[in-house]
Amino acid sequence: MSKFIVFEGIDGSGKSTLSKNIFHILQNRNIDLDLFREPTSFETGIELRKFLQNKIHLSPEEQMKLFIADRKESVNRNILPGLQNKKFVLLDRYYFSTAAYQASSLNSPMEILQRNLVENFPKPNLIFFLDIDPELAMKRIHTNRDEIDVFENLEKLITIRENYLSILPKDTIFLDASLSPEELTDIAIKKIESGK
Ligand code: TYD
Image (tube, rainbow, N blue to C red; front, top):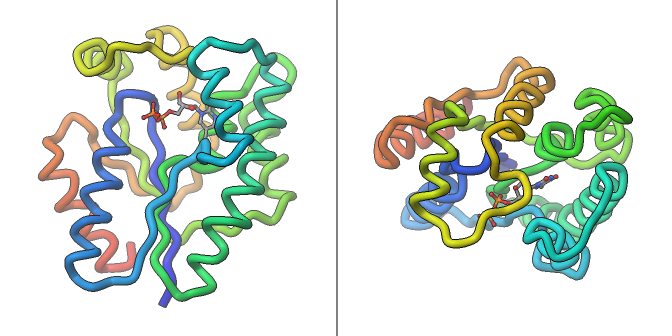
């Protein structure tokens, strides 16, 4: 049976580590699965990485359009083929990220979420939100990285976290990202096993 599992959180929350750990555990149990991330590694995703690294400028409206265009590639070339092959699909960031990160005076988080929902992108079966204090997230980012992305400053991360809290569905699974990677992996695996 296919299952579509999404990981969300602000920069520095550790969702990439968590999704990779879960991928390896499920793989060792012989579950047929894929792990993808957004932005993708397709052309649209490469363009977005240039923006994230501050190499090109994009307005919030342009960012939103490009993230949605990249999501169409992600859905058609990665996610749907996986789900159609009855695989588990793990996805590091989805449309909740666009709602939280591209919100501006022109578009609220809810409006951006709506712009994604009308595209009929597949709905996740499980959504994990790694919740972290933005100050702790910033500390982690400064300790672990040489390069700082456009959104990686305290003020932006505080707003982005609030945006997330305003749009995440009621059945989102909140995880305390200050726990150790091992504890987080254990909790998440149990949730996946129980289907909730
Ligand atoms: P992230 O997922 O943290 O991966 P990496 O390990 O490569 O840093 O980085 C992706 C960045 O893209 C992150 O700052 C959030 C941003 N982003 C958006 O602004 N909107 C989106 O819709 C998505 C998917 C990501």
